[in-house]
Image 1 (cartoon, rainbow, N blue to C red):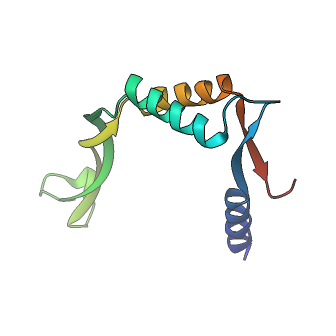
Image 2: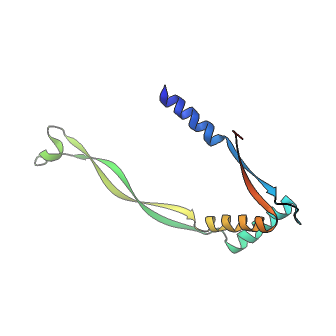
Length: 120
């Protein structure tokens, strides 16, 4: 029961926020103009650049016991061992820089991003 309430509360907290762009005083650009210009500039300066990266992950592997392997096994026929494995994944390495540039550009154009939470 406690787990169900905790899960429900977590979902409410995570889903209870949104963000909007709001003007910082008077702006020379409409929201649509600022978004279009900043998105173009951000994508020009920091284009999508996907690279294959690698990381080490640990997985549990089931191993068969040998006759001389009484330390791991006892009377069992298998044991579990945690082993490192290399995992490859693709990531846009410019994504964070592009986001920072976009936010800065929007600020220079007179707009700021405001976060709104459900309890406000």
